[in-house]
Amino acid sequence: MSSAVVTGAARGFGLEIARRLVDRGLFVVLCDIDADAVAAAAASLGSNAVGLGADVRDPEAHRRVAAEAAERGELSVWVNNAGVAPTAKMWEHGDDEVRQTVEVNFLGTLYGSRAAVDAMGARGGQILNIASLAGLGPVPGFGVYAATKAAVVSLSVSLQGDIDIAGLPIRVHVMCPDAADTRMVRDVVDEDDAALLFSGGGLLSAADVADRTVELLDSRRIVRTMPAWRAGIVRAGAVLPSVGLKVLRVLRWWGDRQRPTA
Image 1 (cartoon, rainbow, N blue to C red):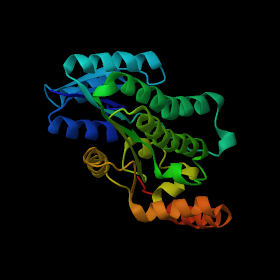
Image 2 (tube, rainbow, N blue to C red; image 1 turned 30 degrees about the horizontal axis):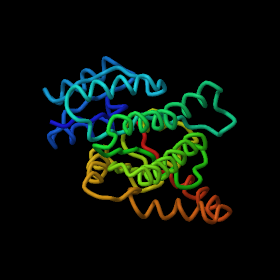
Image 3 (cartoon, rainbow, N blue to C red; image 1 turned 120 degrees about the horizontal axis):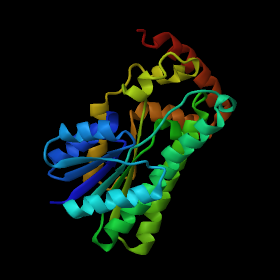
Image 4 (cartoon, rainbow, N blue to C red; image 1 turned 90 degrees about the horizontal axis):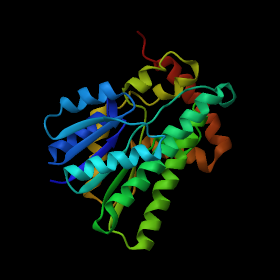
């Protein structure tokens, strides 16, 4: 049996992705900073899953998780999903919040990718990184978060280039979904700067995002966006920022009116 690792797997995208990897016949090591929650999540998936407490900001934690997965079978899939999404204007974030966002979203993905390459080596495997549409263009209200997700996209594509040059049989994929109905989004639903999250005509479901993410294992595609039409708007905003920022102000106004209410 082959094994897989999913970070940030106590709930949301991570748990749904882990569920689909178990269904594919892999033994899955779920890890999360919330050790109790991830243990319960793993137990819900049956005997081919185990949950470990791990802080993705610690590179040694990734090595321990990789070693645990290797004991269960050859590591063939590593999913860097752990993330945080505080909403505020860039200058309103506290220092600790900025540091946490950068370390969890970007350094966590970097450390996880490095551990995966070290563990897979010449045998090969696949790395799935979870970014966001916010990483493809300007997203006022989520500037720090967007910057970390842009870094994840750049890291993923650059990593594939390095892997190709090294001749290793490892594929890297990065999923960039729009806002989804997860606890991360529900936690900021009442915050003014979160309005853009609700401008797309409805939140994605974690299950649908997980389906599309795991499908990448059957392709050689590096970057996938979801939904494509929203990705087009975000990318256009990056190419023509002056125009894009004006459009985003309209979308923010619309999102504020579509915001879910308790």
